[in-house]
Image (cartoon, rainbow, N blue to C red; front, top):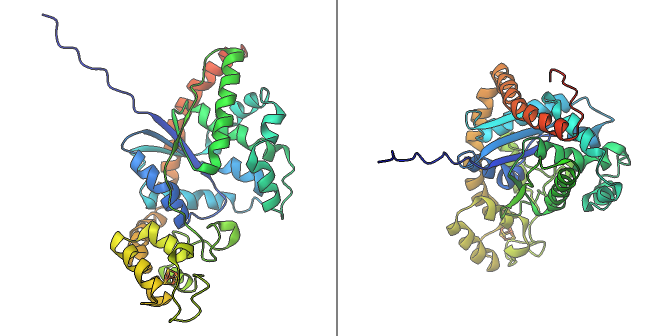
Length: 342
Ligand code: SF4
């Protein structure tokens, strides 16, 4: 009788995701990405990268705070619940293979592919106070493709606005594979439904608009800003009925409050059963318990910055093992492996 075969251990799908280190993480990042990343730690092999080189594509003229933002971002991620025992958390520039692969991929990417990326023109218009007509900014999606392909990621969690970048990454992988042989898998998009998280002025929450509620903002400051947040403009007095469907405060309720509160707001707002201050107070009752434990963990981490730096150094070592494997294959496929010691 043949011994029972042990089924091969299924490899967990590999995920890569990251953020540019251009400022603090806010509650939009929490519900839009971090919550999802925290869940994926148990189901995927996760690589999360703090993209300091990407930050330079728009912040190249003033680099004075990039280093500080890297550490702050690591603190925010760890405080939110990323666990270095269950994911690889690292800084892009600590793994120089990102730059090498970016350079090699840039040789094969037609300019027209980059010029047609929707965010290229949009961001040049929106970020009017910086000169973004640079080689680095145009090549942003190539660096992003290098980040993903370096780890041969199976899956990339993306929002709708990032789908074009991921499609370009897939095109770059196909072009490389057809020129030099199969090295890169084509990463798949993992889109998750993300609640809309408006800023305090009703526009999309963004650090560049100054309307963000940051994870690390003091609770009292957050309370004051929520209480001053714009609402349905039709409710000029307590007696005016409102429409939650057009109110940004209601969007925040949808992201943080329970169903009973949502139902209550939906009814009471429309019949002017309570005022906007009441409504915002109910929101704070749900938002504050989310923020407090994050801030408590952040405070502890702040007292041990050496540990945070150690976590990033360990993460870079783990990431580099995978990055080096890929670069060996890339150089061999391109026939530029000169037998050096890398
Ligand atoms: S009651 Fe709430 S949902 Fe209605 S307008 Fe005021 S803040 Fe917005």
